[in-house]
Length: 401
Image (tube, rainbow, N blue to C red):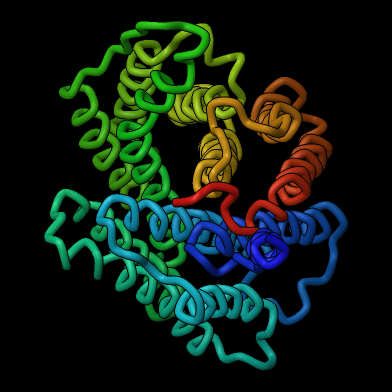
């Protein structure tokens, strides 16, 4: 009995960070989001010297939120999801450590222009995406699960976009920075639309079963397909033709279609479940983003309002909600009755979105103040995530696989 007890104790205390993809990438993404937003606050609000930064602070901020933070969350999610979809183990142990080190080197390398040539940084940063792509492709191809091919295509497009970004940064491709940044940005939103359609109805139906029995959500396959096709058309127009009349019209249609679809997914009980309402509010911010994109030419709004509705409200809340949910579910905890209070964490991200997008419209003369407050809420949200989830991510499951 003493021996069994000792083995159980060792198992509970075992270091499990590199057991599966979501663990190091969710931890790394959250820590990176906290640190980089703090740096961005110093650069933007206090005129802090960028030192040996490889690009201007604005370009660095945009690139690292897309190809640094967001892609790390996507990597953690896909490495875990593909393992579940295919039944084949993805990266773990040394191979997972290597992938996370390549990602981390790309992040640090942006601040070492005096030590790392830009072309070497580009090679390292794109090697991360290539390695991730191979790790995801291997199990999918090995069992011929061809319905997952859109995920691989999106990763190929991420690689293409990041190559275009660095080509623009080195002066090799005219408009390459713009194409790379907005291409990567819209790929994240496209992935968000694809994955959410797969999981949101299931999450809501299962998540409120203890409060509201026999619910029936409205799903329209033609609408799901229309949203994807129209979004791709909108994104291509916005990247290559600017915010023209047709792009604005598509933004209006996308706001309406996403609003109708979201209304069909609504049940009152979601507001009692933080792991549900955070994902629902993230989709509301997508609708706000499309609406602001359409309204910008008419009301002369800054285009950055729509960008941050999509990024802080949409991507920020969705990634934080998904990391919170996946981290609980894949460590043996009950996602339908989470053991920790998540409301303050998600409310901080919601506050970050409101102060970054809505307040500058209402009180434009205090624009810099609202950005600073939004940055503070963003940092607080990820600090709370790390406080509540670090031990969960570092320790083994509390129940068998």
